[in-house]
Image (tube, rainbow, N blue to C red; front, side, top):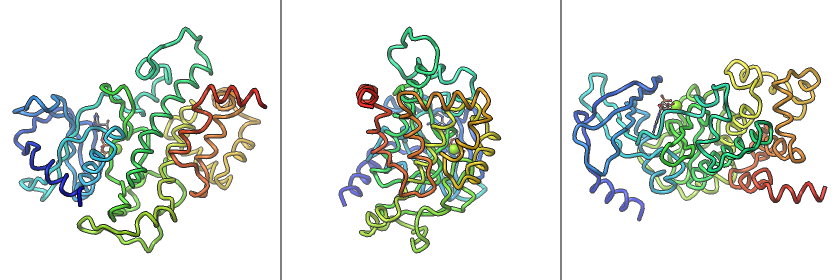
Length: 352
Ligand code: ADP
Ligand code: MG
């Protein structure tokens, strides 16, 4: 109940914007469910950021507004700052939903990973002290580890709120220049299980490059698309039974893999990897056995990086990319993994 009162008060005091207040800038993205622009406001109150992002969405936008409102109240640091969403009816195409966020920065993780300099191009963005350490695996591992910690932290926020993102990929991770951290964007395919919004959009919404092998995150008995938020006391139970959050963990595991293996960063090589992994029944260890003997330098480099410190990185990767959802590690447990604790891991290798 409190949440709805809070939502009402927030909505009441927040300035209301209309279509005419928005000055369109560069187009940032175009999908089958909407277009995204960089925009500014014609009459900008001092409390509003100058640089904004606008998404003009189809009917799916209603769910996306719901998700963003909820994120802002429950785990604001996980996602891009959401400012306002409204229904726009004057369009000739019929009703649209317009969503406004703070413009967080120029680069997504996909943009940064495309550079030959990756991960060094991220180092000065997220690490306070850039060490005199020579370039090499240890230094790369430290940067990748920091990115992974930020991704898992953001994901843990969403999952603790009861939201599964379902479209985690480098294109949906923005580097926030203000927070000097990566944040999640694009809640267009997300599901909120605790309040009964578990709308399952068309399957083709899921990006096959990063999707876990399970097609549906919930059993087929799960009700679909309630038109209004309906509280269901059963949701936490369903969550425990189905572990839908592990769908995102698989995707973030694939991002970890791509960061470690330069040769798997392109779309084509990721698609090829997915085929190979499927042939190995989604068992990373047998995939490794099949490719390592004839691995080129780029693959070898990835294994070397993950094998540092007694293979603690490889251990984390294999606990994320698994066929069975319930065998995958949760975001919260992953954050406590010894991979992220270099002191603890020194002690560990000492014991071994
Ligand atoms: P789509 O449904 O088209 O995938 P997204 O929400 O992923 O929509 O946004 C498309 C692109 O717009 C992103 O990949 C990113 O480059 C950019 N973008 C989205 N939100 C922001 C933001 N808050 N700040 C900066 N850029 C953003
Ligand atoms: Mg997107």
